[in-house]
Length: 158
Ligand code: FES
Ligand code: FES
Image 1 (cartoon, rainbow, N blue to C red):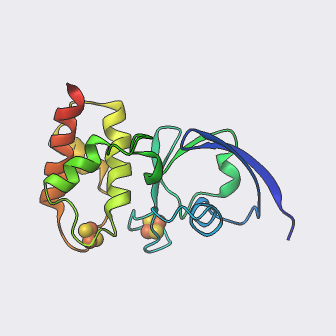
Image 2: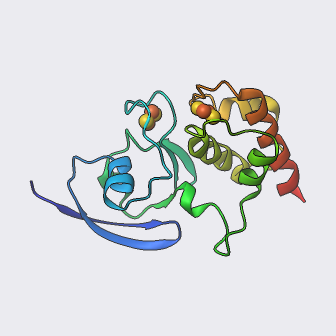
């Protein structure tokens, strides 16, 4: 296996690492960099558990070829809270509105919501629903999840 170097920004830190070009971004994050907050569900782009943000867009990291992160900015759930540990308003709102049940979908939901709220601080309910359309919650907590994102949007506007 011929490894290649890839350089990118991960949660605001420069990363330079040798990778197998056949890897996915999810493999690099979880298995090599041990950032296990990003979850693997289906592995084929259908559940959204593996969602991270690349250059401002929510992507399924299980489908994202690792070589494509070259020169880009990647944010995972580990990079969402403040460095002092203060939770992001979206994380806080998920806690307060019971947006978390088993938690398996939660990282992906939060990353999808963050990609939306970073662009739009006053989204409609339809826009929120669309932003998490690729995220499956097997605990069926969608109502609380949408309420969490709505509350976070309100707080982030202030
Ligand atoms: S694990 Fe990537 S979409 Fe399901
Ligand atoms: S909280 Fe369990 S899958 Fe969503």
